[in-house]
Length: 453
Image 1 (tube, rainbow, N blue to C red):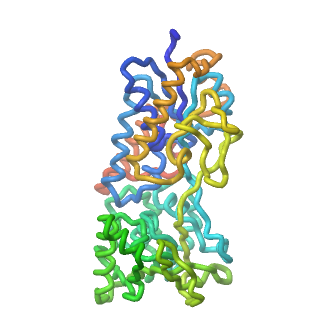
Image 2 (cartoon, rainbow, N blue to C red):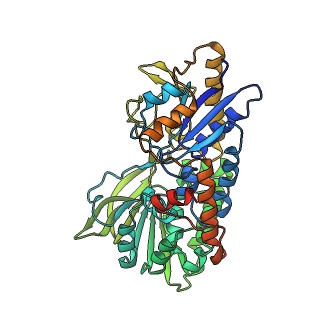
Image 3 (spheres, rainbow, N blue to C red):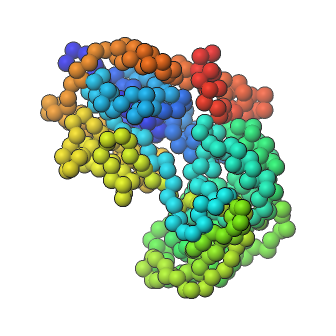
């Protein structure tokens, strides 16, 4: 092959960037990698999913950004595969396509009243406070200043993030890159009580200790735990004994249960053994019916038939992410992933030539950001093995310049690496007067306009 190996990576989150990095880092490989994203900016959930007040985690963006400096790698933003260009067309210009578009949809509770006004998905709420271009500003700018009590359903880190952002003072968020309209809305909040609901016990929660401890360190919010919720069974005792992280979490929660409230303006109520079974309301959600559960000895719970009601005029469900299909790409709707073996996309048990998958859409929404690096490297290893064996197809069409001409001919305004650099500079300039590293530009058109400056 006299020309470079041409690869399209669909999705610019961590798994996509790590896949591009793995390809560009091959010493004996001449490769051209286009990292394609439907948004005008890269980095996926690192930009639009990691809490803005977790500055150290969000700094992973700087590491990912360096991949775009590598020879042969470029960003192509504001290009939606399946809308602006088909997957079949990509195969005309690229020898292989790696699908890394993640799992961006929320899992539902599947209970009555879930669709009431004021009941929202954590994925959507997080997107709003991170400044996602598709976020529904009007909904949150209406709900937050009119709510007094919130129920956050879930006991993972996203649920903790949501709870913490709602419980913090605006002064505690000033250093973040949140758009100004988000800070203004949170500053107008009338919320006094936040209920964090988990159907299992403290030992089964999936918090990381750092995030958990932060809840107990907020300037103007008391954390309240009912000692009756500190229930443990044989399975709990075993996981506490064998998992140091769980043991640390349990100690944090036990300490909270001993605290005397300091009469701060907000209260965070952490409930375990509390399973939401219904949302009730009128023109919007007003309360959550919760069933008390009991540990079953094996890590699960059973219902007790004991029900209570929690006042909540804003409910955020945070019970996980799920993937979605893309066009005619094979998709396992039950698991929310693209069926694959070792990263090779499969249809009816057979590999699809030139199609690969990495990240959450490959394995489901598990692991931390760094998990995606190992996962992407494994997928790239499969791709290179196929190239070496001669089973990787060769794209029949012309040069990458001709691919660019195809997009230009359709009137598609793509954002290149240089365009992203211009957006990055604009955001840093926007944040500088407020002493921030940056302020996120949230409107799609504004992002595109910034990319040309």
